[in-house]
Image (cartoon, rainbow over all chains, first blue to last red; front, side, top):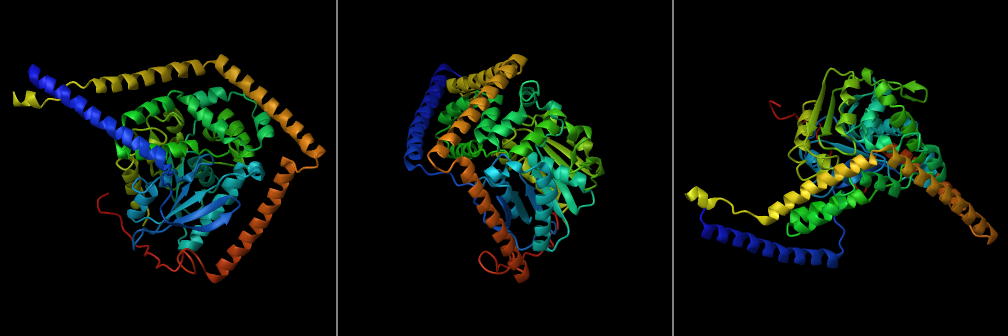
Length: 359
Length: 128
């Protein structure tokens, strides 16, 4: 490349950058002035069961013919459930519907002050079987696949480990921690020597969302600020801005953690690591994941800083099923399930794995 | 020669983006090391403890204040909320019972229902 072409090339770069800057200003002004909230959780759905804050949704099928086995999303307690139905065109639920699945979702809702008394037993021994029964009545099918994201995966494993004979066709866990010794900074901060879980729960009841949000943020303190710089850099790119806005909305919409469940999970899982050691008991019944015989899939993110790979990887070793698969994908805790590349990575892998096991 | 002509020219903004990514990683590692120490965790634990204590004292003070002025306290509002939630639960149970007797679901009955049920006979694409 000679000098004149190099100069022309650099000129083009600056010309392009100037054009991008004009677009940044225009788009930034549009967003600031319009004040529109990004559209989230927009896939049409019906509430087929409600109980307190719990809602069991059935998403309206997108095809005339669906797989026999319904798919039920079991969500985490501490985040909004629209992460699996982020926005039209970037929604795992929408993708699965288009692939011909009959999709349900257990949304725990935002706990009220009275819900601070809810324990793991309530979720695992009462709410999940109740929802499974409602899905059975709705579909006429005896079995269903459970797809649990993060804590929802733990709930699914606990339920299946307590009731190995339950009509579960398949279990899919996504970014689900099992070995709490691998939880890195979280475990360090929650060490019983300096973290008094009883005082926190007794003082607050439900653990405030800000407490949880700040803990997550502290894991990567620079992320937010670098995110703003990257947003500026990509403000000319409509797809980037759209993705940033919906994910940012989700990240900032934390919900309280039901107090007693937080106390129990801190003591039994984070401190005593009982899911990993096989000592976890709910209502005096032992959770025995080694008795699970349903096909099992665990999808993990290589760069997950919330549920690190050291915490998630051992999960499938606890499961007794002969048909079990681990998939490690690039990405982080959120981008794994809802990022723009999830459509190329997690979603097709999940759909293919489920399809052959859902007839 | 033609190949050389089509090569991308050096982009100074890409260098800046690389620097940003590397700096982010380095700073995050630095903070991770810093926050992974026992001293940091102990300090955070102490701050949390102080915050919880302060919150408890303030809640007690507020409770006394509302009681003095004959106003409903947080406890009273929560008690009311619980009673409402109990009524709501009963209503939901009745609604569920009525719907189960009518055989209503997302695919029958009124409102969102009434759509044709999809056939549950789909087969996976071959050779998966």
